[in-house]
Image (cartoon, rainbow, N blue to C red):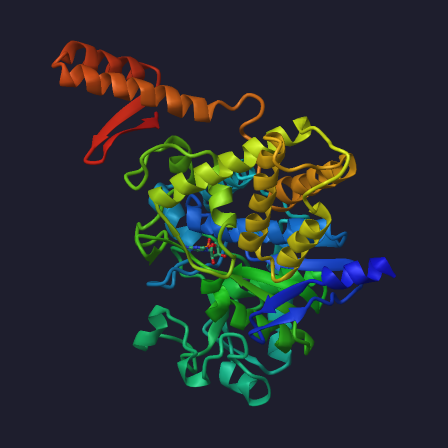
Length: 494
Ligand code: AMP
Ligand code: ZN
């Protein structure tokens, strides 16, 4: 009886972008979750904005696992077919020509980078990581089915999805809430050079021009698949025609996810996804972080401090804590001040984690971890509300410090409960690593360099240029670069 009451409190609610409502989560098969998240297009290094989206779904994955679901998490690698915004070329081919490499060399290089970066941020690997190029046959089969069902047409070796025809019986725009007149894909075809019947139509298969280097045989001639198709095909193959959760960044809602729904409906006559989840954007200087505008920061620059937007290096866990302090559906703005504040918060949390095992237990408790634990579950079960969860964790941090000072008391059993619950939420669910225990000395390094910067300032004030230069040069020789700016001196690791 008590258990069911608890389960009721912890009932998971997910905000569904399809209905724009929070809904109780009911998986297709009780106890199991199928989750698909759109992966990266591997033609460049991931920036911190990309990382935010993958980290948000890592947190979702972690919480589902913690709740006891058996989760099959599929996240693809786009290694073909993603057209650039201003041409009909695909991103991998364009980059391969620019760098004079095989497309698969580009793919390999940036896939390795992607895995390396996500591991640094302590993201769990997905259960299956399929590639578009590994599923060309399945994509050709899907196109044949859509053609048989009368919802696509062939022109000059390309195949297009017939959006207007589809929209006679189904609703194109169901996810993005666009009217059909406005649902136009933003490609060069707008200027009238297109083979498309209508500007809303999108490519399922594209004829390869002679210079196009990624190419496959098909019933329609030599070409390559359209980007939207791989996700429909691979999600269906590994998760079934109807699965539980589909995720990605907000910017993928249209056209990518709208097209995914249309393709799946055209193939299988069923809505493919029960819960559509969209993570919001990471911005910098108030604008969306993006590869093409250059308004972005790379993870490696965060770890080294080597970027004009930050005054120092930050540990991956600090960046992860920074992200988790915002709800995944809120816009989050990256700034040096916000990172410095996150670093303080993170340190306070980890200091408390380290103190916790040493606390002395009393006869009774003046704090109530039982109720507090339920609050933590309620926060996470309310559409993964990590900022509220973190507020609760800091309530516990306050207790820990007061118990240490003898101003609050805790019984042995309550202490065990508190410790176990803190570990669950901090390490397992939020995926934070404790860089303050063991061998990580980044805090101490910060403090030591601050001392040296102070001594150098003193030397300069004394006009002792020889000493101030020596401090700078000796640090540089150790791979610590001092940077003099208008707000004082900062450092980066070279
Ligand atoms: P792409 O490799 O361009 O397909 O992007 C990979 C993922 O990163 C997608 O889910 C995008 O929605 C997401 N993404 C791109 N820019 C940002 C950003 N500034 N903030 C958060 N997510 C982003
Ligand atoms: Zn996708």
